[in-house]
Amino acid sequence: MARINFMKLIIASPSEETAKIICFESDLNVITSNRKKGNDLGKSVITKSLYHCMGADCKFDDKFDVNSKVFILKFSYGSELYTIFRSRGQFKLFDERLELLWTETHRHLLAEKLYDQFGFAIWLTSRASGKTEIASPAYSYAPYFVDQNHYDGSHFNSFNNMGEYSSYKSDLIYEFAGAYDHTYLDLTAQKTDIEHRLTQIETDLKANRLMRERIQNELEQLGYSADMPSLKRDCDEFEDEYKRLATGLSKIRKKLYQLKSDKTETEMAYAGSQRVVRKLCLNAKSLRTGKCPLCEQDIFNTLMVRVNSSISREDALLLSNDLGRDINELDRKIATEEERYKSKLSELAVLKAKMNLVKRDNLTAVQIEGFVQLNKRLLDECAEFITTLEESRNDLDKIKKQLNSYSSKKSEIDKRFVELTREHITELNLRSIDKAKIKNVNSKIEAGGSNAPLATLAWYLTLLDLKKEFNEQLVELPVVLDSPLNIEADDEKYYRQYSLIFSTFIYQGQMIVSGLNLADSEVVPRNANIIILNNEKYQLLNKEDYSECKSVVFKCLEKN
Image (tube, helix red, strand yellow):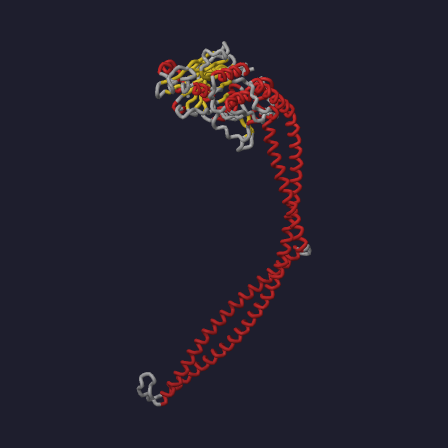
């Protein structure tokens, strides 16, 4: 079984040139300070910085400016040594010689790189995509760390930004204990997707059936007698007839226009000839007096003048008479063409009436044809739905069979969870918890007052026992308990409960616990590495440690 052990933590503030260096042993480490004056010295800052440096977002107090700090954690993985660096959202991993292996800023990609490097990860189903993915590192660390302000029972509340997955707790526990793996979550996601698909197909099938019933009713009302080919032939014939009539009307209009134009010109010529005749008649009267009609001088020989004048007047009369006949002829022709035009208009009106009837019948036929084609497509679609429905049901059955193979181990883990939790509750003397209500990993384990931390520890201890019993091959990470008895209690109760923690919470890997006044306490195992803080309040970082680690800090900062 692979194991990660924390070896050295550096918390540095380059801008203030201060730092804190803390070294850890591979077994039990106890970070402590004086009980009466030991608060606010930095115990929680140290414990929170460990998994914060590894990629989680711990809940630091506002007085600790986490964004101005850099965190460097040296750790072992099997026989190999590594160093991880964090500055705000940037992470870097170095080997034993402090050579850069990779750098990352995206939390999910960081989780993937940690999985590739060290083999630990938690797979969860994305709320956004519905697909299984490696969750951010905090989900892998959740069973190993408890914040001093979150000893509130069976909840993973010690890290920020753990809301991206809905109802993830049971999936995380089952996966942590080995009942689930990412294949199981993939199958679960596929099962959910198929179930949604089946619901949609069944809804679509119902809509398809209702649509076909409505179409059948419409077809029964419209009837099936309409003959589309005959209607099309009639439409073509009417269209040809309409074009012929329209062409004929156009020719008649043009001819009428020309005749009326000719009549207008003839009438103008006729009126002109009438004026000429009248004038010539007046001139003839003037010649009988021997006077010239133009200059009124005496004409001594009027015979030739009278002869010429008579000839011109006769021509004018003949011309006027001819023009009059032409006008009469044009009137006759115009009347004839107008009658033809009226006749053609009547024919066109009759044709339009027939075309409207055919159009109405044609519309009915088109509706029938459309309904028939739509019904055919709906039948084809219905067949596709039924095929897809059967295929999806078969796929669902296969997935359920695969998932059933996980059920036995899940049931076994649920059973063992109940047994272990009840044992720890008894060991920790938590009489306020009703053990009969503990049914499975989703059961609430909570207690009030000074028993709340112990109830929380009973739950975490059970999770670690499940992992050891059912999923030993999973990489083991350090357990970090941040001031598990951060409550008001008298000395006797305080030490009695710490004694219960150290005697009950036996962890095969590395364990880091913080608390007050534990340096010389008999309740602390003798093999524990005791880390005593005696600095001033809020002065955890100092100049001396910064001088010691300055070169490492800047070497990590410089490499990208």
